[in-house]
Each structure stands twice: as C-alpha cells, then as structure tokens.
Length: 110
Image 1: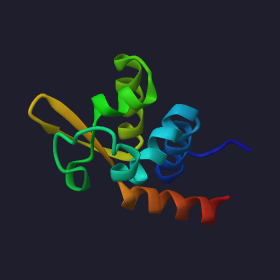
Image 2: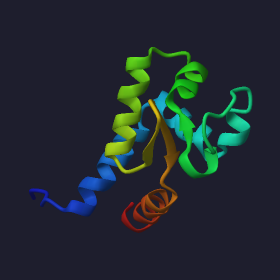
Image 3: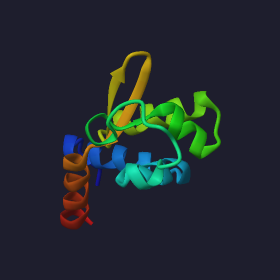
C-alpha cells in the first residue's frame, strides 16, 4: 500500500529529522533554558524575548560558524526555532508552540 502525502505527517517527519542530529538536539536542549545554558556569555539582547545569539551557540558548541548556521537553518525550516535579527546578529529561540504540537503529534500518531 502506497503512502499518501499528508502535510501534517510531512511536517512531523521534518521536525524529527531536524532533531535526529545529536548536535541539533543538544542546541535545542540548551535553548530550553538559555539563561542557565549561556550564563558564561554576555547577552547582546534579552534572551527571553529574542533568544540566544548564534555566535554564542557556535562558541558553546565548538563547531564552525557555517555548520552552526546550517544547523540553525534546519531547525528553523522545521519550525522548531524562530530567528530574530538584532543589528548584525541573528538570535534564536525555541518555538514552544510548535514543540508542543510535535509532542502531541507523536502522542497521537506513534
């Protein structure tokens, strides 16, 4: 039996793929409590409203800037994070609404 295209299923698969990478999953865990996870870095803007500067994520992850940018783009395309520009810096925060939808989808689908 062939699978039919379902936008909800496609979105769920994209979110799960994005979280399937250990580094991306770790970043999502850090972003859950940005004040504690990034306490050693001086915030450029309010972490609660705009999130964590990508340079701080890169420094904490110890990965190349291009790798972190790619990872954050993947998480954003999947709807798991939102980005905000503050001057020349991009900040990321979790999209808790989408994460709640993901949890609900897993609960009702799997």
